[in-house]
Length: 177
Image (cartoon, helix red, strand yellow):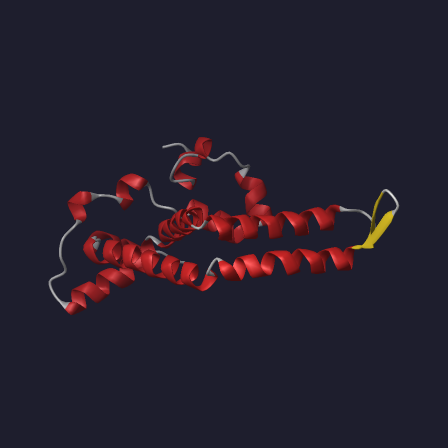
């Protein structure tokens, strides 16, 4: 194996970003990307077995949560995106809020002029919140957060419980984190 493929489990060519720049700017994100396990290992069906006892289930859960932590974060992001796609009002409201804040931040002056009308940015931020917050509240954000948490927790718990990584536990405990 080359040095770049050993540092990045999916191979450096698959990442469209400069990994060295990412390491400088956001070391946490760089660490999560580099510690992701390959999909072949994450979905290895030959390791699937029912736990023999509650102690075995607990051990599997703890070992797999630590070992596949980065992969489980990707599962959380995918579930979040799928849930947001199913709630178009919430997606539109959040996108409008983010786009409005970004556009207002990028404007160089504190006052925005259009023809003969001049408006202070503070009032535009207020108008943006006045319009988007009711739409966000109408689109049930609490139900969205609860469904994301429930679905992600179930998927992660089922995967971590069924995957028997007895050889991973010993190698993981020998690593210095």
